[in-house]
Image (cartoon, rainbow, N blue to C red; front, side):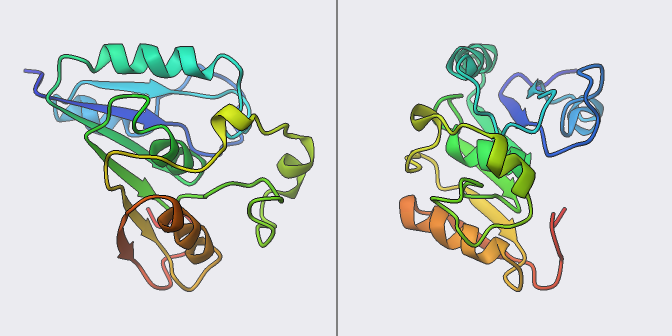
Length: 173
């Protein structure tokens, strides 16, 4: 039986599969454990820089509105969104595995892993400004990697709980 007291809202991680005909991040796990979940998939690795994203976030919030506990959850690009959009989806908690603060070179000049995306993306100010969150996200990351610099930037904007996993790599999951 489904547990309607809680709800997971997940965000897609960076991927090479350009179809939307696939499972959402963590979908099998949440289904197997009877936890209702809403999953935001992306066809492209656009770091959720879509003009219609606010409408999608509002739909996710509505889907989870009956739950007392709402978890925003993602890995890497999805963790970026889980932290950044936790308030927009009505999250009461956020778990972010290897979150990125931004891949915008103006905001994270040290980030070199997604150069092709950095050159092609137009970062929308309404979706990529400072992080403001009512929840204290748990961020799991490898402090021996570039992800530490992202964690530091996230923590500069909003209080976080750090889960340091040395030498776990990217993503830590």
